[in-house]
Image (cartoon, rainbow, N blue to C red; front, side, top):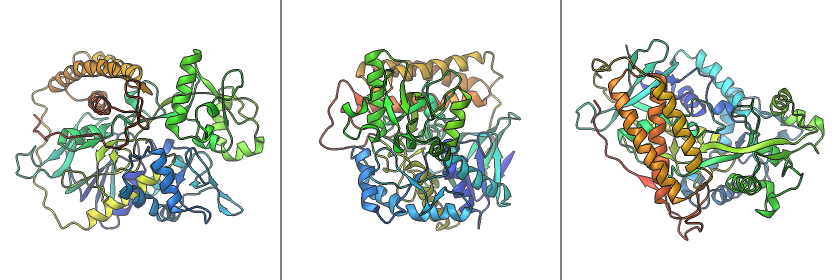
Length: 527
């Protein structure tokens, strides 16, 4: 089966859906979603969206906080571009009907770690879900958007893959996970909005869809990738045997939550003068240090000193989920551990969301825009999705008409049905475990080299499997995860300093000059 659209959007989170809605006024849009439109990392975002909305706040202050949190690796132009467009992005969401939480002064703004002011607009503690539900309703109602749900993109189709002189992206192949059929999707413009790669780690706050698909596809097609060593570990993931990937929002600390040892002693003031309001990289390393030093399974986040009514109003989702597990946060501290949370690096883009391949754009967590530097400031991620998806839309709409050549159908004539699919689950488990052990919060060169050796072995095995057997959803995700893991380790080995989220015991000092870690690869034809 083949589809033809004016624009192909791969990924159905905030970046993908906001771009699709903006484009649908004048274009036919194809929107690929790995599961359903409701399933994305965006819908898991609890805290909110950072933007300068208060007269006591300022653009310069938000920029300064972002660059400080990013360990001065941020691109100044990209940082200013995003933050200056923050209010307009929020206004657009309000126009779409997102029901942001209000107070007597207007919209309630909370404060999170690394911010010097209250500037995080939110919908209680389920901001991402509220935004996603609002946009999904509009996407489903729009006749100019064709949603290909339960489809996973396999690879981009570029001019050099077709034997043409140009390297332009003309669409992608995608697997229909229900039928097993591979479809061909052609479009003169393609936007990658596939999110991050948290599932490369054993413990993560991310949904199962976060397998680095867009980053891996773009790398295979020849795009530049940068700063993949900067994986943000969220300090406070709920520690409970029945709680899979449940995040305790940064806003809990922003509203006065304290991090405690099992005996009730605070420890953050000993690690940073900002204590619980230090940026995430600082807090995650402090928790990791205390757990390893004392042999702890977890530490505790306590906000029980706040009135129960306050907690019920500001954190209803966290309150309810914890109660389901027997934890009453109005009376008890919450057991927490760090977990892989956000991919700060990714596909290199300019201020118009363009990659190094003509016709290919990227927005959201799959991108490396320069906004986050070496560590993302809390609640800047959804803002980046909105601003850069709009930038991509504006550039796409300004382009002249482009003819798309006839694209060949997927050739499965030389492959067979898999004989032992258990190979996929074993490799998946092995990859995530050694990435957690060797490429986690604190790294050494020896650990990174061990991981690299294992990645090379896995990659050869997975590539051989991919070449000989029919593709499946799990195989495609594993193939993308091992590529992403390789990029993370290669970037980490190149960085001979400790900066932001990358902390090396072998290179504990930060170099005087901040430099990006950029990887380049020549595009190649695939069988």
